[in-house]
Image (cartoon, rainbow, N blue to C red; front, side, top):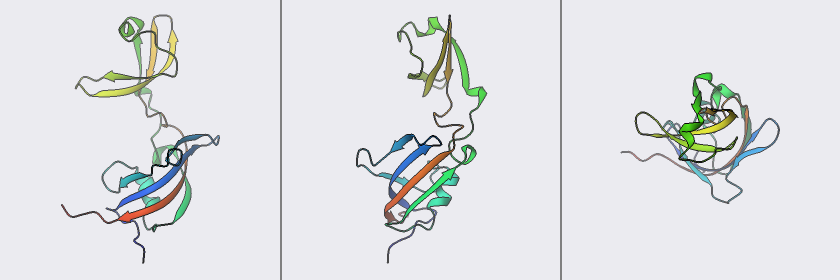
Length: 149
């Protein structure tokens, strides 16, 4: 009898993540390397975990998650404006480029260059898939119950 995904399970899956226009945002199938997730550790959205619960090894499922259940809605607070002078050391940025920025606490945050207008550069720190409905195609390869600490 195959194991089913529980609220604290480690689960090995192949997945494809697509946008509404059918374009593939990410897929483990491209490189043949499945992803290992642990439910309940905060790395997955609650909506995604709910769709995985109860699945068994070998199960395949497809479903869509609205932005608020997936990567969140795009927040205007996470769009910031910088002076071009602040990019002198990094070179000339290109629209669409992802760059790492150092936060006040020393951690690094990725930001996408959205616009360059004269001396002003617009950087978006939202998750790249924020604001998008995402479509999952998931195959459960293996389920292992979480080990007691």
